[in-house]
Length: 243
Image (cartoon, rainbow, N blue to C red; front, side, top):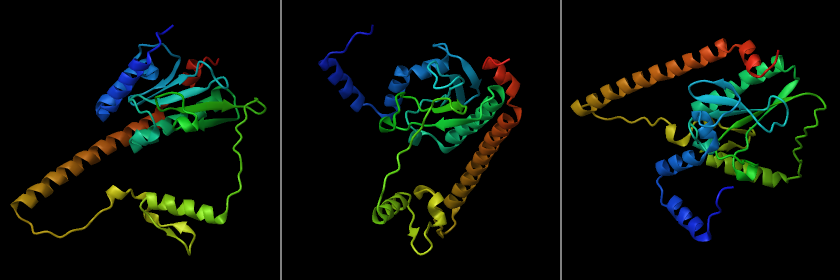
C-alpha cells in the first residue's frame, strides 16, 4: 500500500506544482501518469492498435466486451491542450476500431465517449476516448436528462458562445456567421507595406516556411490515408481474440 502523504508534504507538493512552468508541469504529470507508462511499455496492456501518434488498449474493467481506450501517445490531460490534427487522428482511429468491432464482435453499434474534465466524469489524467461496443438489451443505459429552459436563457447562452468564438450570431437568419470556424488568432489581416531589402528577405523566408509546412501537412495526410486504407480488420479481430 502506498505511503500516505502528510498535510505538510501535500502543501509542499502543491506549492511546487504552482511554481512549475507549463513544460515542467507537463513532464511532472507525464511521470505520474499510468497511461504514459502503458504507452512506453513499462506497464503491460492488451494493445489493440498502435501507430506513431495513438494507441488503443482494451479496458481491464470494460462496460462491455471489447471496450477500448484510445489515447494520444503524447501526454495531454484534457482536449483543449491537444492540437487539432491530433484530435482528428484520435477520432479517425476510433472510426476504424468501431468498424472493426462491428465486424469482429458482431455488435450492432458503439458509443464513443470523451469525459473532458473532472466535472464531466474524467477520472484519468490522460486524455482518451472510450469506445464501447453495443448490443441490444446489453444492460448499459446512457440517460441524458432533458431540462426546460427559457427562450431568453437559450439566446443568452448562444450569444456568449458566439462571442467566445469571436463571431456574431445573425439574429434575422437564426444562424452563426460563417467566420465562426475561423479562430481569432488566425484571421488574415491584409496590410500594404513598402518593399525594401529586409521585407523581400522576410517574404522569401515566409515562402520557404509555407512550403515546408505544406510538405509536412501533405505527409500527415498521406499517413492518414495509409491508416484508412491499410488497417487490416482481420488482424484487429485476432488481437481482440475473435476466431
